[in-house]
Image (cartoon, rainbow, N blue to C red; front, side, top):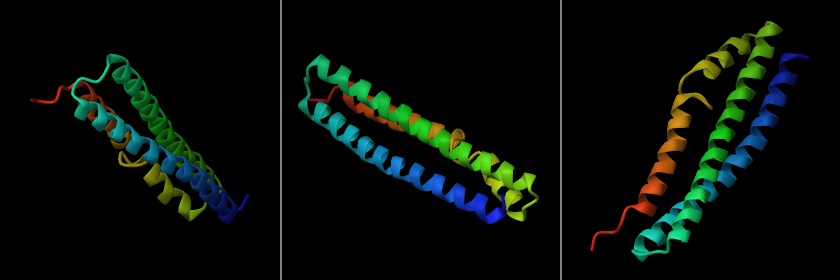
Length: 128
């Protein structure tokens, strides 16, 4: 394959990954709505808190997985570009190896941070 074909396939892969990410942002927003409703209720039933917590955990795991897929896309296509000797391969490989890149430490921290924020809003009692 030539460089432009590999870059085109990488971009197509990122488009579907980005659409999945948009859905996860909506699910995350809905999770914060759940958490806020439970917090404002003050004495919400335990079953509501448990189901909401399971929802938060599922969305966080999907969010984490989406980042891992994006990181994998970047890594695999950059490796292919380096293999064929394309100049863009090394630049893209630097992004794939960067700790701020998709699927790396900061992305994982962000997923966990969102989960903790939602769980805290759900399980910490509202002061009276």
